[in-house]
Length: 241
Image (tube, rainbow, N blue to C red):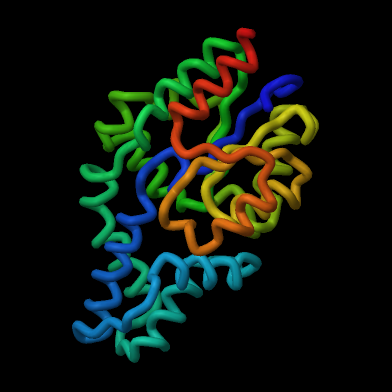
């Protein structure tokens, strides 16, 4: 998995951090606010992923997502106001509640110690990434993003979102490496598809919110791990045997 690799590229939401469930709660609160307290019995995360995939080539996929929510739930609010409300609802969650997945910092420290270049390729918006960098003490105290990662690309760095491989091509160019010299760590189907589209091997870390796509994820990825302890054990066995 790591032999011949120079760069390890991590996704953010659902991969490095336990956030998918929180984003589902944020969107649930948003839908209730714009839909007069009503919410249908849906898988919010799956709905969001499907729509962001559909809008991946749009100039602002999240604005289009908010447009979809406005239409579906019959809101009288302006689309831009819905998007702003989403960020307002999210602020407290992002600063205080979101945390790394268990033992992420151990994997990051081990990879740095072994000389790998670490990068982030995320569809998370730039403002949210800045909150994680500057204000979220859970993240800062365990593994400061600015200290650990040599390159952080978020939504504002690209025109098209995953599964389009643009963000990965940008990393390859910036770090002057080939696809064969990289490994992507992901959790979701659209992330795995982006890795496949870039020609880069993908290792999947389990996230329960991707269970609806588990069979396809396992089919398209080269490696699968239930948690970061299992991943770390595999890495040590590979590099130190």
